[in-house]
Image (cartoon, rainbow, N blue to C red; front, side):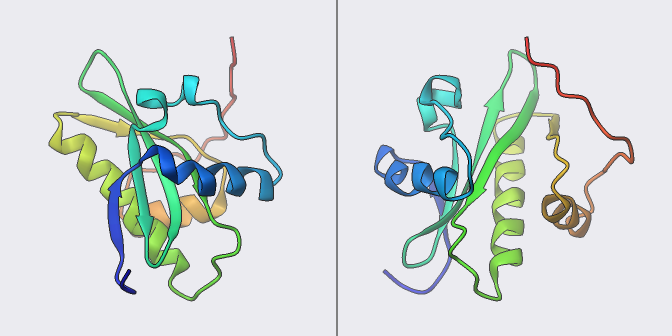
Length: 133
């Protein structure tokens, strides 16, 4: 595999990386049952091996929601910021290409916010409350 970035759809084989990243970052892996398309509804970015993944949730309207972005905590190369920035932009582009008129996400991660500012996305200044029913 080359040293060039490749963005592609998630495949089941990618979970040997994805689930490990969740655990290494102190979280329980997200169940495939709550991920879009049973875990295949998103994009993964890689060089020699996968680096980060994000999921695009679709609704019965023209709205998409990006969530569960996770990356390899051991990938510490200088291009990490830009790689994740490219993944976020690719997810937004995928949503637009399939007809979404509105794409959104919520986070309190300073790193994700910084990347979205660089992409010139609209960011609210308010904190948010997560309501789990």
